Length: 264
Image 1 (spheres, rainbow, N blue to C red):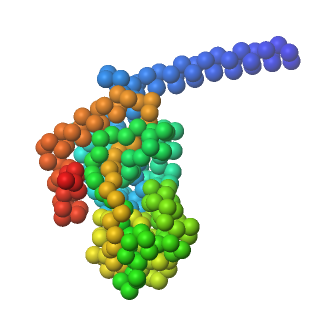
Image 2: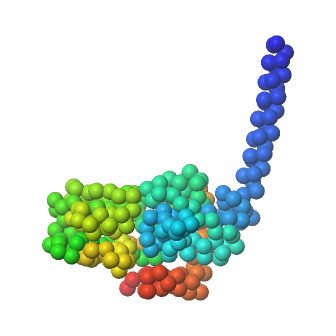
Image 3: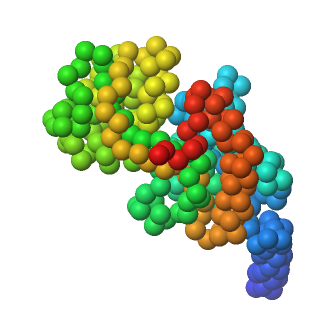
């Protein structure tokens, strides 16, 4: 009996060593010649929420479309990789990139100091800004009018932080679009979201009106801090897409204007 137990331990030890070697070999295969690392060799797995139309949204076949998705695909092709969009709820995307669920996030993240403590940002791929949206009959026009008002925002967005500067009544939704939809149907006093998203919702028939543009912001692609070579590679690909007009073309396709150019 004792001999059998000893034999079993030896077999288990040998099996464990084989598995460690196997996993190490697999990890090594995903380290590219330029020092960058990918979850799967020859693939660029990028996260988006699918909740942020027209930047990313779900199709009937459960694939994702939108400006961010097209930018992610263009980046992958520029780097010679297969694009693999991966849906993660917006509030969990940064953590998903940190923990290796995606190589990057092409998901309209605003560059800010808080996020920069945990992840790396590329150069901006488009320029945006938070704007106040209300129902058409609202007396709210500027941030001065938000005191004591109920403002809806998307969970995990920078807009929640902005809203809390002006009111203590901040309500959160899984996406900006659902927040705008709630506003349109009579809930809450205002929504703070990206001005392009709000304008697009108004075009689609939401009963909302744009008010003050609060500030300008820079949106960038998110990558893990421990993968500087991939960051360099993505930045180089982004610059090429700027230079050859690809970013501008994708922007015109989705918005009818070029939001990839830095505002004057």
